[in-house]
Length: 193
Image (cartoon, rainbow, N blue to C red; front, top):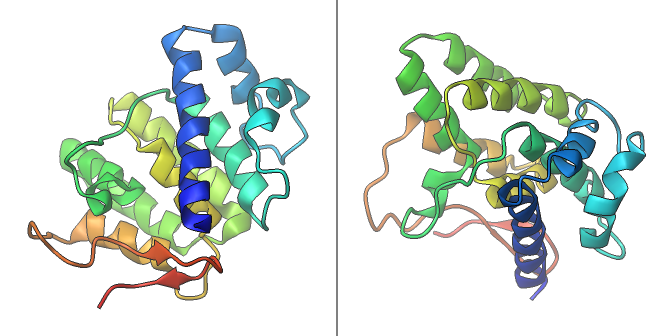
């Protein structure tokens, strides 16, 4: 139930961001971009476009994730893959894999490894650089999935980093049962066996 509510909240928030981009609301997107590299609350221009979408009592890391993803979206307002694409193929690792394939160099892989090994305090800077590269190469990001992943970044089991690595380096077959980690009501990662 908690996962479904969080998923609905994330979907509604990203739909709002897409609406801003679709309406070409340049002022709103500029206000959101002012949050790049800043802590939540340091760019009050973001508040009208973000605060209404925050959960009433955000969990640890949840509010920061909304601020970060909103500012990154404003930098590169694209729609990510959806529909029939499996969830594991829509995460940020899949976007970085597309960049690696397009660039045909080792640079994207080095940047991706740095991203996977960073802690929460460094995550904003690493993601900002990676999103700028994706924008420059016209590669989409699944913003809903990124929002959920950023909220789970600090998990001891590192489910987000493992899922991104599978999408970047692994080849999955259709019907693969392990399409990613699920959230339980307590917010802990649960993997399918």
